[in-house]
Amino acid sequence: MGCTVTLYGIRNCSTVKKSMQWLDDHHVAYCFHDLRKDGFDQEILTRWIRLVGWEKLLNRSSMTFRQLPEEDKQSLNEGKAIHLMLVNPTVIRRPVVTTESGVWVGFKPETYEAVFAAFRGY
Figure: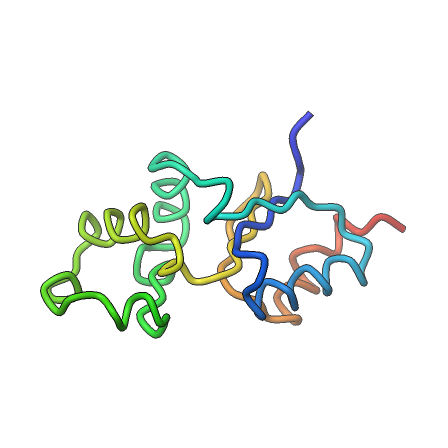
């Protein structure tokens, strides 16, 4: 049986750690998927983009993105962004949390409070 809530991220990312701590503290069961170690495919990325948009997923302030050659950062469109995220998963804004009903990018306690009220294991 699959997970109802899946948290995608990189384990040593401070925002991912905060998200995991919040979910643990609020008794929300989830599976962790390490984008770097476990990988992911274009099908997953395409689903996220369909639901939240590539602009929200692409973290232009990440160190990896800032270190890319200028030609990779110029004239970005969905196709180029997909390629960048598949080749460099650290340019994906983290965490990405998925449920059957949606996808959420980043960590905001007030958003988690609303989204995960039904998933609490009390």
